[in-house]
Image (cartoon, rainbow, N blue to C red; front, top):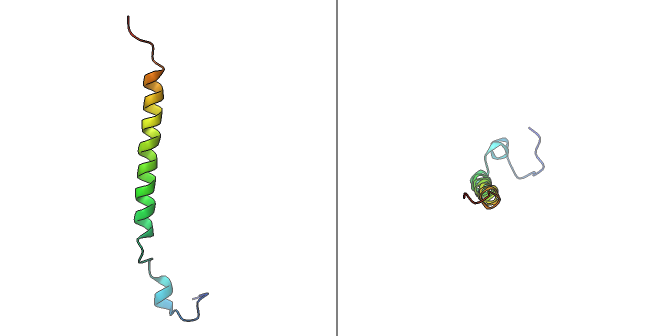
Length: 52
């Protein structure tokens, strides 16, 4: 297996990141989706005419 770090073995190269990068991406994406939904909802609500 190709590795750019001569100190790492094949097993080390295949291991996942111990810094939980995937959790950081999931949390960031979820926050982004919630904020986007809130902006769209607020815009939609504010542009509706008042019922008479």
